Length: 385
Image 1 (cartoon, one colour):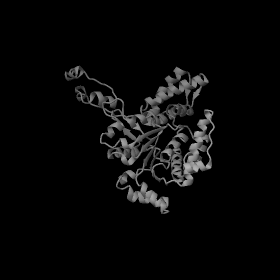
Image 2 (cartoon, one colour):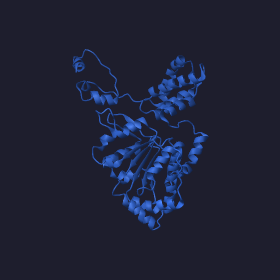
Image 3 (cartoon, one colour):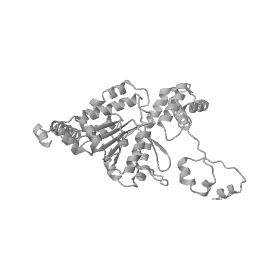
Image 4 (cartoon, one colour):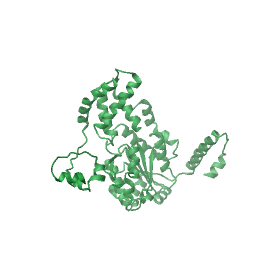
């Protein structure tokens, strides 16, 4: 208030800096804010950031007694701009150059060259995103992803194939860069493998089963649910979704029972699927471009079971769901944003028996670690199924 009154006297010109979130939280509604002209300083383009890095790199080289190749400078701007969205260019890229210089000097000594792959390694260590060129090991993982997923998910061939193809397209960088890696809607009765496929994908592609943010949409049925999801202007804790993605940007976002969500929540995810970003309650832009979004729904489950009983093909079932069953639940423009709407069929008895064996084998391994022997007979497993 003192500063505001001094500004009114016109004795001096004031230039201040702040972030959008701090402007919203501390200044916008106060007397000082009303006396200031807001000037938005936009993030530098990648090309402009490279020019800044060329100027800054000499001092970092002098400090650490290393040298940067042009590919390292270029990659720092490119990868920081793409994957470190919370801090903007050029600051994010300058920080990456500094970290790479320290790392390379520690590993290789002085008077050595920092290359582009060193920058990629730093980004990977910070985000767990595989940003380096696709290695033979990762190529094998992508090509064999269906087989790896089938070890955990019994049946559901179409679902597994669609998921694997989407990840291969994303890794080849032929998707729209700003959108999520993939947006899937899994439809089917309870207990057929929808959530298990999401867990298997997290483990096999993202590295760990816990690389997943799971939200139960039955808890977001009210109009105030949006504030819980993205946070509120005066709440530094942030939203449940936006904070989780900000801290873990390379992940699966799993939305269980999507049909139970409030319409405003669906509108929120429409933006995520379209733009690959959300603005949280304090004005920060949260990047969703390295997320696989998977929504599950039991809507149309009875229709699926009836159609399977009548011998209908998956394509016919999907058409019936999209043209009839789901129209009263989801808006057409919302459904159209999914890269794939995947139908999970009810499991056959043979598949249920396979799942029972799979689970019993897992139990057996855990018991063996404790020195306990466990064995199941075929008849017992069939009875269990």
